[in-house]
Structures are given as C-alpha cells and as structure tokens.
Length: 192
Image (cartoon, rainbow, N blue to C red):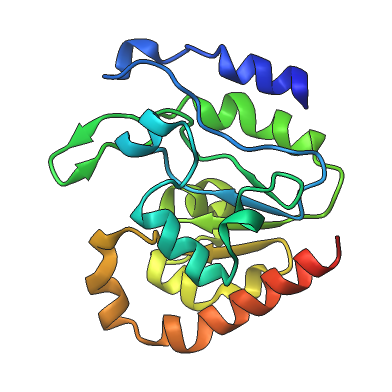
C-alpha cells in the first residue's frame, strides 16, 4: 500500500482542471474494516490535507457514532473519494469530482485491502459508480433501501450543511437508518 500511496501523492492526471493544483487527499490501509467513498475534498480539506476536516466530516462522524481517533485511524477506516483533489467552486457549491480518479485508482486500492470491508457510499456519485444498475430512481430511494446493499455497501446522503433541507423532509433517515448505521459500524470496528 505504501508504494500505491506514493503513486497517488504524485498523481497529476487532471492538473489542468484543478484551480488549486493537485493535492490528493486519501487515507488508506490494507487492514481497514470500513471504506468511505465520498465525493471530493472541499477547499478547506485541500488546504489541510486531512480528509473530512470540515463541517461535513463532523456530521459524518456523528452519523457513524465514532470519534476522531477511530475515524482517522487508517487501520480501521480507509477514505478514498471519487475525486482525490479539490475540483473547484461551481454555481451552487463545489464542482463534481473529477472523473479520472475512480477508474484510475479505486480498483488498485480495493485489490490491496485484505479484509471484507463495509463500504460507505456517501452521495450519489459514489452510489451510481458502485451500485450501477442497482442505483434506484435517485439518492433518496437508494438510501431508503440501504438494507438490500448490505453487507458490502451502505449508501448515505452527503452530510453537507447544504443538505439540511433533505434531512428535514426525510426524517426516516435519522430515525431508522442512522441507528442501523451506528450498529453496523460498531460491529465492524469490534471485529478488529
């Protein structure tokens, strides 16, 4: 995995499209029990180089029921977004993840993982890429039917503060899905 991490750190295949230049932000270990696949780092994460080092990360850790020590322990949790670098700002938030990363790196990374991890698919980019035809009519329907993807995948909405309205109109997520997510996460981490 160390060789792969060095290759990822040097990656610049989409440098011409990145307003702040390449800075891949990942956290990887061959022993991880959980893999988080989100969208792409935001500007704050790009600057710090620490995955999920923002308000979305605080919310995601709360949803998972874990603390920062567990979250940032690569032996427990790997983090590989759909796009490894900050894609820049769009009209209503950050741009979509660059399409080059996942096809170039994800399979190489997953082939190095020697556990049977639970993969959290955070947001529709990850869900469409990994669930393919099983992706339902949209993110809401996919998340609502999360049980059909277990034990391999657990689809989640993005925990961005911009998604507060989604959480308000879908109270079932906090009432039904989050308790199951916390239980599955705890079981995976106890099996270390």
